[in-house]
Length: 142
Length: 142
DNA sequence: GTTGTTGCAAAGAATTTGCAACATA
DNA sequence: TATGTTGCAAATTCTTTGCAACAAC
Image 1 (tube, rainbow over the protein chains, first blue to last red):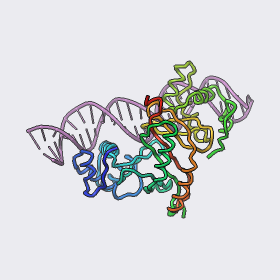
Image 2: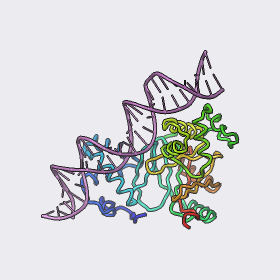
Image 3: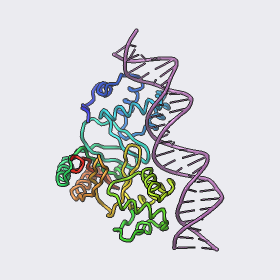
Image 4: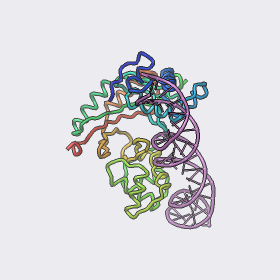
């Protein structure tokens, strides 16, 4: 995984990913910063168009993919679609609301310990892990 | 989630899912039973064709989807494709080899406890969770 | 100015659907 | 026999690629 340092300047992530700071990429990045839910390329493209800041679908895909590869975005899978979300720190897990798609990051030392233990027991060399909780957040459950 | 009881007879899963026991479905099910890795609809379709037990791609999709909805299959996401794997018990987690795609099921009481605790702390009503470990198995790391 | 980026149009790939022929219970 | 199932062909949807115009450094 890449060195995804906390983001301060608006284009830190772009620098980190070795990408030029274009209007389109900054737009995508700003939109990601303003939300606390995950979003698909298709939805983001539509939103930006409606917001009068159009960015080509191709470019949205390319930007999201690049940022995700550089470790600045987390990716989820919603049905057949890939959803992305900006993440500040390198390692965490998620608490996802299935109604509003809000995503909260949660620390999980307990999970880390569990992962290490299980992998060792089965003779696996760990390359990664994933631990997400799905539910209905307080706001959505009324 | 459906009542995915342990499977004994070859067509228990089909019964459980309310599906008729057709040659195609039995073929798909048998193939799933014989493997310990996860498989995509496309790959499974190709394999069956090459094995001289052809099943239409559409049918493979429909069968896998039905079985997964009934809780007899777990689904993963490999790149843009959905991969499936037969699972015998209702609740477990996975240890996945990224080289050979082998999947081992692992119990995880520790994870269950962690899930409950975190969700409660954030005011979430839990609908599900996922905890998978990815790595290289002993055989593949050689 | 050089090199990376954009976005349209087109291609590619996974998955779903309509429907007539067919198999199961 | 009644109803569920199959699978082809076609349609949908998500994603990627070719390429010429363009923008960042």
